[in-house]
Image 1 (cartoon, one colour):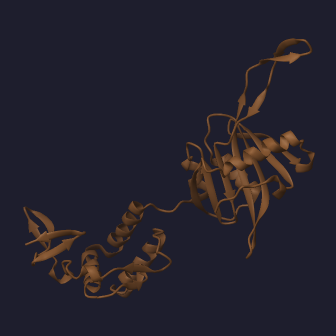
Image 2 (cartoon, rainbow, N blue to C red; image 1 turned 60 degrees about the vertical axis):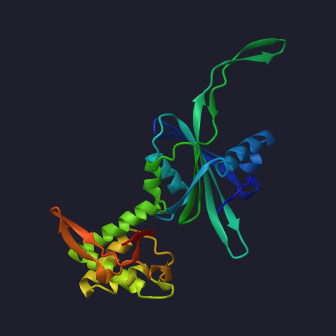
Image 3 (tube, rainbow, N blue to C red; image 1 turned 60 degrees about the horizontal axis):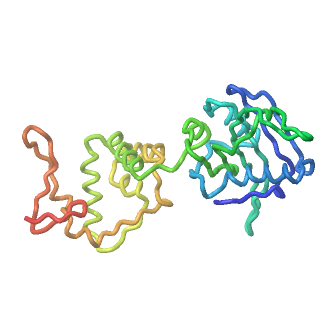
Length: 287
């Protein structure tokens, strides 16, 4: 979900100035108290959080945060080697179906700029410029249980882990799936997977079932429950509780009833008898 916030959505701008990892001051400025120039500068910062130039992660939040709790979680878990300010405000996302409250957060470094020569009257004289707010390094657009997490360079994994979780990569899903299999099935893992392969290879059409059910249906009661529990705990996406398996192109794949294990050179190996032409992981093997 993308959003370009405008200050018309908000009643005020809030902020917490963090020095050495500790909040030292806070602010709350009503939008109507801002000058036109200030309005534009705040608008630019908040709008840049959701800009196309930033990398984005989708987060499933661990709990429902209100704005202050979310800011507290940022202060507690974000590790920056510089002072920063957390700017935030709240609005309502409106669609035809619903209205959803959201919080937008911009985490901006604070830098002490050097003195400059400023024109005063007929002379240029030295003038300190004090602490200056830079553009955001990290930003979040947060709904009750979901957030778009924006970052310009470092994604700050420590903060992500503290407040939510990101979707697993394909490699992580694969590892989690096989871990769930091996930890719950032990020596039965191979025979169960082989039985599933046999079922798929024996069909002519697409099978659509719950991936978890496909496996657990072939287990005894206790192991079925163990596998279901491991499957759930490993947070393996279940494709909306459906998995599509194209079986028509598996007719030439080595059938599970042809698979066996055999010790070769002292190592346990999976042996696939080759009859005419078979395909293994998409690769044709000729006899």
